[in-house]
Image (cartoon, rainbow, N blue to C red; front, side):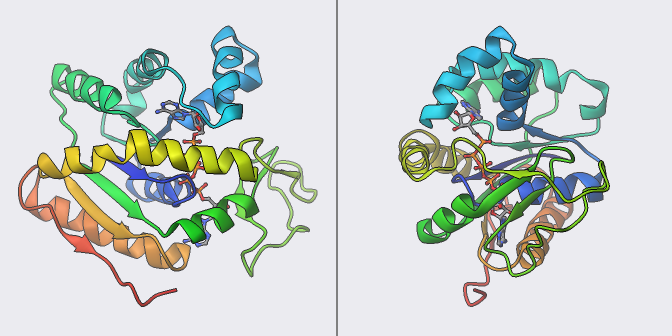
Length: 236
Ligand code: AP5
């Protein structure tokens, strides 16, 4: 399975990609995670990228495309992949098409995680990540438990807030999404590869809708006839 998860910051791409990865046995390739890893390692690339990430701006296309080229060549990506947060510009989408064409592994589906901006803000401001096991949680979730034990340390999770999850940077990221990434929706719709999934509701509800969309892909294959709308707007 070769898919892209498209959607605004906070729409749940990373959360759902993690579940798909474990159920489908293919890697989640998140450019955000790859860049944060480079920042944590203190590499030149990481230090240059951090300046853009802290402002909520996009890192240069050529940097991100180079990272993807390397990542996709690893053996675990042989059976397929879930792109999370990539591509994010038309230039990146074209580069991805070319790269996958070279590999004779065309993209099968672009899934748009569709969510209202008022919910995005709440999800992003409440997000916390454990420093030790990378668990992503949300303080606004009724099941959030700050005393839960981390499987890595046996002590309570050491949660931190991402430096770009503050009000000003979130606003900038949403503006950039609208200007530079949203055009990809029309692009993938034009290629007959777009599925829109309602990203409201619980993580489980959204996951079930995603899986229905992917089952359609398995039944109907690449390209035409995958423009299904998998939405249940009544679920809050
Ligand atoms: P990146 O890390 O990709 O951030 P993003 O796209 O802004 O997306 P997020 O990770 O913020 O949101 P998400 O949709 O994954 O939501 P999540 O599942 O965590 O990029 C960061 C930066 O890196 C960019 O600004 C840019 O600078 C750079 N960058 C990255 N890729 C790039 C590229 N291709 N080109 C150029 N620059 C690039 O969920 C959010 C929260 O909501 C969590 O707390 C979660 O627990 C909760 N949640 C999720 N689903 C639900 C649900 N159904 N109900 C309740 N809570 C939920």
